[in-house]
Image 1 (cartoon, helix red, strand yellow):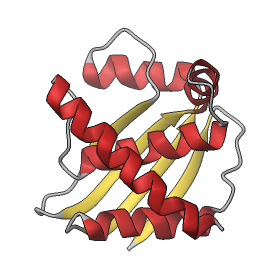
Image 2: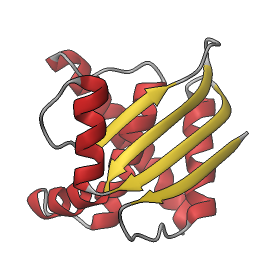
Image 3: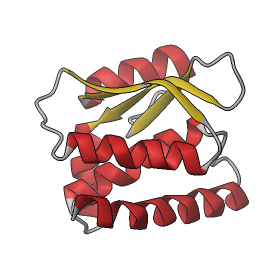
Length: 143
């Protein structure tokens, strides 16, 4: 039952790593799942672009890609790749702190592993509601 953090082609330091891990485990438990193993890989735009093109066939930049390796229902086993370049750019675009954008992208990737999708407008609304709900759960943990 681990959450690990890695860097690929970027320099970045995740603050409050242990508290963030606790928060992510709370999200997993509240959604009725169990954690097997979860990796967060923080990377550069070019690194994630290569993954996006190779595995999803998308010829675009993205902020997050999630890979689900679980063979058991209601079990989390996966990798979440996050472009730190995109997080920085999106934080400027959305006019919020880099940390807030990062936490949003982290929980967004996790929600995909928790069987949420964001292809339709209704799915996007549900995903945003879940993101906001769980971001509000994080504030007391970081205090």
